[in-house]
Length: 428
Image 1: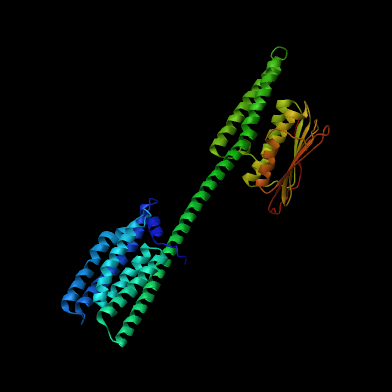
Image 2 (image 1 turned 90 degrees about the vertical axis):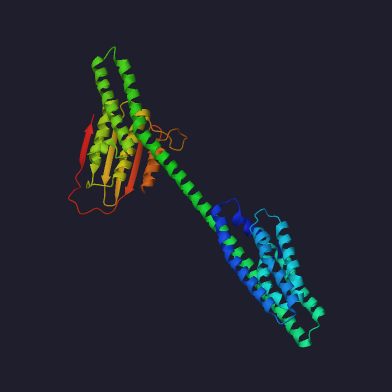
């Protein structure tokens, strides 16, 4: 253990402003030491009064001085142990005072050395290790030397007293260092617990932040795939109506009706989004039916032919899978309306197999270079949704060669089914 180790630091840590609870723990841990000091003090006082030597007046004087140790500890020693200012002044003042009370009585009555067992732990609590060992050595050497010079004992008695002093020093040093080690370990545990609590709070904070970020990202995707696309359709239809009012009133009326329908569908999507339920197109409908509605809506808004085809054994799937496919189809059709060109045919193919669900949306429009930088959130959102469900999304395109968006989701093996027929549905 380092010679600079001190127990006033644990006392400061446990009694500092970091929390009243820690202070209470330290006070409770100090109470057994109070009782220990009181017992040693009382036993020493009784032994001094009952000693065979020296004479009664000297023993009475020694006992009176020993008695002063108790109020000195209560008034000065205990507050010094609990002092959290970090100063060594109170600690040294108490130790010097305790030494002045101890040394004369130990020279007069050698039995007074019993009080060493109470003073030694206090020295280690208040002083650094090197200082405590020096004080302990003085408490053993000075009384023995003074008692020997004053009373001139026999050789045998002198050797016995010397061995007793050495044993007292060794035991007190061991007890003091053990005390320091225990309190140092308690300090380390307190530090570790504080670090664990801080780490737990940081994990909770990061978890909450991550959850909030994930929720914002989810809401962004939902708004982009529902409300934003609906508003885009309304804007496109309103522009068409504005150009048709003067020369094609029946078509303008059809577009106004379509605007009303789109607004209602957007409102239904907004309500489903707020309620946290499934998309409006899936409410009470199967996935193939929802895709048929999307292609019908696309044809109504653009006039371009759109055809949806379902192959394989249609079966109920987890809502999360159907939402991924539905949103991917919505985004692909929205991109076709915005970028592919007027009256571009679109083919939507949904394939159920034993281990996968695959959606393919292909148009014959202008196409683009997938490697070129692009703005927008849609295709990245499709990839993110698909990857979250454990699937894979790919986009194949080239300038002048159209665009194909494919989403593939792994599925558990299907139960035996009589399905397998194709279910074509188209609109033009």
